[in-house]
Length: 547
Image (cartoon, rainbow, N blue to C red; front, top):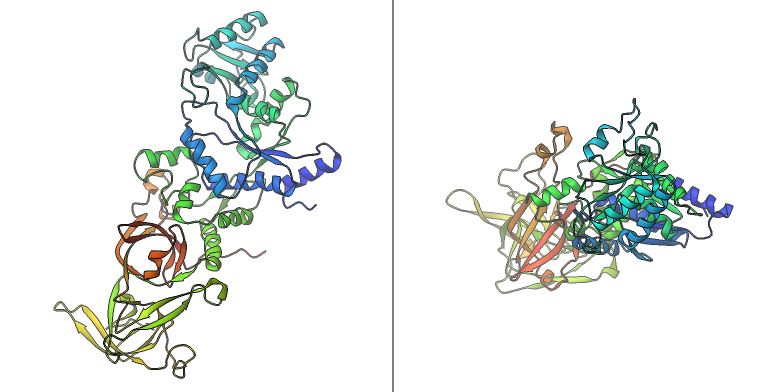
């Protein structure tokens, strides 16, 4: 089996050496927010390893901080993972192991490797030292095993106030790795837990609970982002001293950083809490639920993660690459439809009153398997205002005085005259159609410089468009502070656009390419008015780097 990245190289080596017979990974989110696009990379790595090596991948919620965690986030995370098409083997929680973790802490105390400390959090920070100076040992570091066992039990029983005492590992206050300078293992915290309720008043710290949860589950490869590289010695120390025989191996990879994209749960939560967005699933949010709501196809996100790849060094990805992957997928899979954002009436003078004709259009041009739909053609149709000009700028190739234009799938029109309002604006344009000028007919070869979308006036359906842009303005505009970079124009609502009537019968959630406009998702129906969310533009500005 060939490896596609350095992590798979390690796994293949472990399988070939006999170190492991079966590969077990896990995806371990903390349920304190919704998953964002950065998590998609970790999901693709961990579940991709499961699929490639026919192993297992657990979903484990690292729920050791009840103050920030909620069952809402648990359910949202599970929904996002399923939406991406991944299936976990076992659903686990760090809280499943609270009793086991407590007993492992007791074991470390008995081995003289942990102690109860009375220093406050601020005092612990002040005595931890710096990269240039060693830390200062706690005055409580040399308590006897018996006293530590008694105090730790009393901590569990709730006999001390929050923050009054902690349990610390006894490692090395002079270590060059600050994470090894007697890190806190347990703190007293009276908070309701979403699964264990009020059963516990002490909670394990992430750096203690995470490696032991991996070891308890038999994880073979604990894959995490580079910010945990300095924590690896501590990860290994806890697993070793708690006497696990087949310890997991922590492997770090570069996290996903995307230009002009918020990749921090803290800032995402601020957007929600301050009402800048409508919620975690707002279509402008880089959360997976936001992307699902907007209409991003899950396979496009997987393709994006594959193109980014797995590296050992952090870098920033062009935000246009994600749009490229979404556009690339929708170009193949999204059916076409016609929409008019700013209607302009065309009156076809040589078309008989009351006459209509059915025009058949392919849902996916060039792909017969995509099916067809019909649209009626009559005496009055709409085109977009931008497709006619009384005073055209240079190189304008749409309808002008004396000019011609082709209506997509229908006839060629030739300008006749214009109806003007009192203020000089155009009320309607009068044209004549050229008979037998539809595709394949004898006059279809008449050269016309532009083909535009259109709608029959009698059938056009009013719709509403939500046009989304990035939540952040580009750094090139000279703004670096988060608050300054919030884009005040990230949403534009178009109230009176018109769309083909067949879309009213389509399934909500379907995605379409609105010809010459953008890709849109049919989001909902408001009293007979369909609402569409813009997914991404038609124009692709991303340039794939050459090897």
